[in-house]
Amino acid sequence: MVDLKSGFYKTFANLPLGVRDGIVLVIDGQPTTWNVIKLEVDTDSKTSKKALKLLDELRLIKK
Image 1 (cartoon, one colour):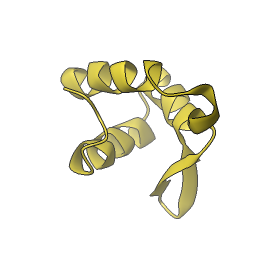
Image 2: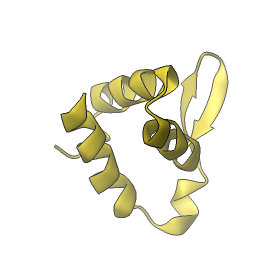
Image 3: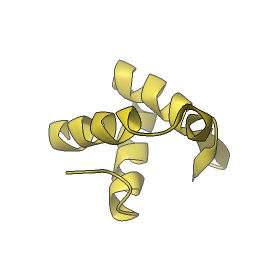
Image 4: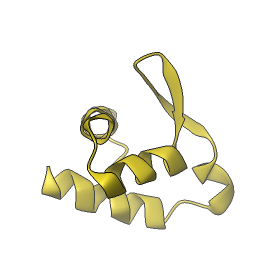
C-alpha cells in the first residue's frame, strides 16, 4: 500500500489545480474528487485503500 500511496502523491503533485476538483472516482456510490482522495490518503482511512486500489486498476497512479 505504501507504493500506491507514494505513487498517488506523485500523480497528485503533477495535476493542474483545476483538475483536482474534478470527480475521478465513485466510491460506495459517492462521487469523489482528487482533493477528497488526498484527504483520505493523508489520514490513511478505509476509503483511501479503496480509492488507491481503484486508481491503480485504472492506471491513474504513477509507479
